[in-house]
Structure formats: C-alpha cells, structure tokens
Length: 550
Image (cartoon, rainbow, N blue to C red; front, side):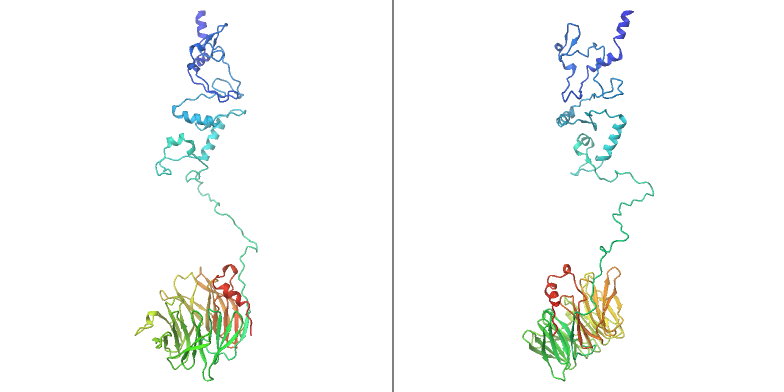
C-alpha cells in the first residue's frame, strides 16, 4: 500500500509535463540568453548524462537534468508578469519548426528581428503584452497593411498567389490607398472633403482689377478739309506704321514712329480723293479719285507707278490681295478686279449691288471678299468667282436697314471659322456678325448710332465702333459664356460725327477721323507687357508712345 502511494505521487501532472518537455525542441529567448540556439535534449548523447556523487543526473552543460522523470520541482526563470500562475505563462515561446521557413528564420535572426505569424517577440524590459493589447495591435496592423485579394492581377499580369504572398512579407504594402478598404459611410452622411478653400470676403489685393482704358485721346491731329461723307474711306494705317489721310484733293502721310508729316501728292481743284488703301506689306498705296481713276504709288520713292481707269464714277472703297490683285467698288455698284502686274490689268467684275459700294474687304486668309453697299446688302464672294464669266455670290445678307460701310473680320480664337462683322448706317444702328462657313447670323448688336468703322482687339476680345450720331467711339466686351457683346466704355471728344476709323498694326491704337476736322489717337486696346506679341508690339507699340505732333 505504501509502495502504491509512492508510485502515484511520482506521477503528478507536473512530472508528466516535465517528461514531455524532453521530447520537444526548446528555443528560449530571455534577456540573458541572447541569440543562442538551444539544443534538444533528445539530441544529446547518452554519455552526456552521468551520475554525480549525490546520485543525480547531470547533463552535458554541467547542470542537473530536468528530464527522465528526475525533476521533483520546476525550476522557473523569474517572470516579468506579475500575474504568472503556471507553466504555460511567462516569456518563453515554443515554436513549431517548419522546413519551408528555415531560410527565412535564419535571415530574420541575422537582422535582429523575429517575425512569426505577424507577431514580434517582446524583448523589452516591460511586461509582455496582454491578449487584449495583442489583439488591438493585430487590428491596427491589419488597417495599415493591404494584401492582394483573390482574383487580383499582379504587375506582370498574372493572378496573385495568396499563399506565397503570406510567406513573403515584403510584398505587403503599408498605407496602401485602394478602393474598398475604407468602411462605407452611413446613409445620409455628407462629406465636405472636396471643399479645399472657401473665402466669403476676399481682400481687395486678390481681386482682379479691371483694365484701365484712358478716356482722353493720346494725340489730336488737325485735318483741315476732310470730307464729311459717309460713303468715303479716307483714312488707313499700313503695316509699315505709316498712316495716310485724304484731305480734299491732297494725300498726307503721317509717320507714327517719329510724328513726321509729309504731303504725298495734290490734285487739281476739280478732283477730290475718295478712298485710300495700303497694300498688304505697306509698300504701295492705292488712291481712288472722284473721276473714277485709281492711282498706284510707291511711297518710298514717292512715284506714281500707274493709273487705272475702268469707270467714270468715283471710287468709294478698295482692298488689296497679296498676289498683286486689287479690288475696288464704284458709285454705280460695280466691283472691279485688276492684276496690277500685267498691262491689261482688268480680270473681272462683280455687278450685284444696285447702289454705291461703300465697304469692301478681303479676309486675312483671302478666302472671302465681303462688300457692302447703299442698297443695304452685304455680299460675300470667293476668289474663284473673280475671273468667272457669270460670277455669283456665296452669300447675300439682307439683315441691315441702311447702307453698310463698316466691314471687319473677327480675329477671336473662340470662333473656329471665319466670322465677319458688318455695321449699318443711320437707320440701322446694328452690328451683325456672320459665320461665313455656314452663312448664319451669329449675333446682332444695337449700337445706338450710325456705324462708320469697326475695329477688334485680339487680346482683350473687345470691339470698337465709330458712331456718327452720337459722335463717339464706343467699346464693347465679348462674353464667351453669354456669346454676346456688352458695352464697356464710351470715348468722347469729337464735336461732330465720326467718318472713319483705322487701327495700328500693333492692334493697341485706333485713329478716328471726325467731321470736326480732327484726327484723334486712342490707346483703347493697351496690352500688358506680358501679353505683348513679340513680333509686332515691341516694334510698333513702344514707338507710338513717342509720337510728336507737328
């Protein structure tokens, strides 16, 4: 009976667990153990255990063996956990060794880091993590890491291997922004994240200032004897920065860069100049007379090159082409076309107006010729009709209620096709803009006066109209959003109606001719230094500020 009791006491739970530990692979890591790899007791040879004089088993390291049923009391390493109560707690971790992760474990050990199943062994002097803290750390790490989901494609275009991805920690991305990771907001929740900045009352320094437009002219030139006639075109500005004006029977030149004036020619008292027009390069000048003759001048040499006579009535308007052709309209309503390079210069005629032709202009690309007459009509022609036996108009517009003198092509880039603006006389007061690609009327504008000239600003998308009554220059601003022109400013100064308008080659200045025998220079389209065109503005814009009035 006593022997049975001794056998039963030797087989306590603690002894049984100690016997099982001998068959396991121990890998201990304590603050004093460092990175030393433990050996399995089963791997030790039998000669490593020997009897001591006291009869206890000794292992190869000189300590008492804790296996083979000789352990009477569990020798424990002092725990950092104050709540330690059993063999299963403490700072020792028993791993299950896998042959597939030996190389990875060796690498992690060499990097002074052990990562197993997304947990890191705690080597600090603080207490080990509680299960709650460990679970919270797992959730935090899961929120900051993003693994590929099933069915996704990798960078090479193949499917993602989740098992390989789990072993290869380096493929995990930290702080990965991907769709579907963030929880969906509650129903009815409205996010204001898209509003980056809101300012109800911005300071005056950040408000966009309006462009300053001088209300007074920069220069005023005397023009005695200027004709007070709506149907004549007696002022023009060349690309060489020279302005020409017809004063009765005389033709005067004004050089804008120096302010010098020069008399080009003077005719007999019974002849008067009815139109002047520069060639495209600004070298030659066409002068139309009241007897129906057209004279061509070389301005540099001050020589009349030739005289063309095709009509017995006055010439009210003219327009050049770059190939040496000139077209002009007469009082009878006929438009003549001449090639000045050949002796027999007449190459074609248009007879579509029933009254005097007072407006005529080729487009910049020379694809269209637009004419306006006292019969309230606007005709559009193409170059292929110049030499035709029976020429026909491309379009005929009957929108105006008075004679049409002002014709100008719209240079705005917001218009993808060629547009032309035409202005009506005393009983019309309207500017009509036509799309020459379709022949449709784009917009109309009531100016409130007789329109004798139109000029455009390419940079500011503005239009200037010279009005006979009331005698002023009126500016309009084009709105792309509303697709219309809004009034901008009125420039007053003339004491009688305006009879003509021309624009400088830089596009910043316009010169108005009034029946009060004055020419007024307006800096109404001034361009900032950053917006100036390098080819034109630097050459002509600065020169006009140094004008000298003689």
